[in-house]
Length: 435
Image 1: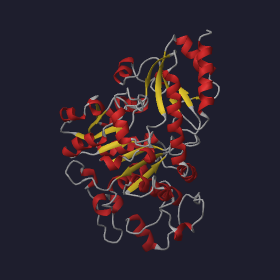
Image 2: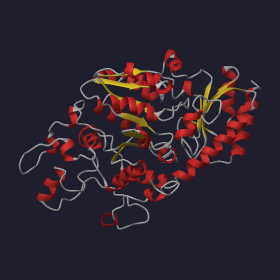
Image 3: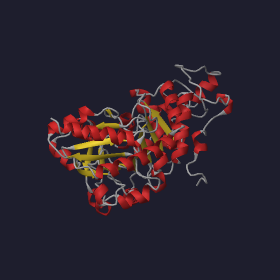
Image 4: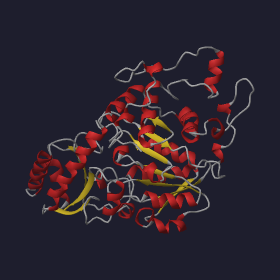
């Protein structure tokens, strides 16, 4: 455990002086491919016995710096950067349930995830069991795990409800059944929460959001611990000999567990799904993410504090029907918030607009300082009516199951002065009453 409040040194870690010449800002390796030293070096690179780079779709020095820094911050053994958060989710779950299987998950998820789980993945023989017990009562999860369940997937804090997952309790159930716990930690980032410390085996990020924090790229990351027993018989795809790991001199094929025992999961994704399906993160976007990560702690702490002040204002506002913010003592997630988020819960929450649809729309149309769009974790403060946007693909029944009310408005706090943000909300509420 670092003696630093937040191990800022790790943000600068994973930097190879011989390769990168210790530049203050990470170099952007805007290249397609890399020269081999000789035929022996080429054989070693393809067999994963020599370190180095092959082709930017698979690995790149700039992307490599990002991967190693995020792995350091999360306490993982390795990470894989991808072109989007959805690619990170999809490649992770396709790998876990390859050939068919089930994923146990919560209904309190980002709408795009839920929609993909129910409408796309079944075409690949992968099915999802949505259970409120994942979040609300992990002690009852035993009954939801089936013989072909391959993992439990949760968001550390739900989008947009703020539901907090009891990671330790969920991990205990998952591990007792020999399956990994996968945690989407997008809202929290390693600054507010480190899921691996509480039993997570795989951590996923949409780096588009708070990790980068500036609304100028799309990126995703997968982090693994290197500790999950992939040889327990439930994941033969990681144990079978692979053509891509063939020794060029002997012709012998190895499994990912044999070739890369410290990181078999992300390495398999890198050399199969990423290699053949694409979704590679470009070096310039990796560079932008690295720049964003350098200000991670300062941005998120300011957002946490801004959220507290805006929530205090909304609590007294006559046009607010309810607030879903786990930092409130009245929230059923308050105690979990204190346990898992000692620095404060993420500055993203929702409230119910008290009024007609026309008044709600007038409120949103009157907003001036807040940005009305669907990103979160940005340096700018953002506002959106989730049932009509980020979760609009869900049926009314699915929205109800996910605890999304029709009058829900989601806020994502940025770095502006909180009094300016409150003043903007105040004038927008006043405008809503003039329709």
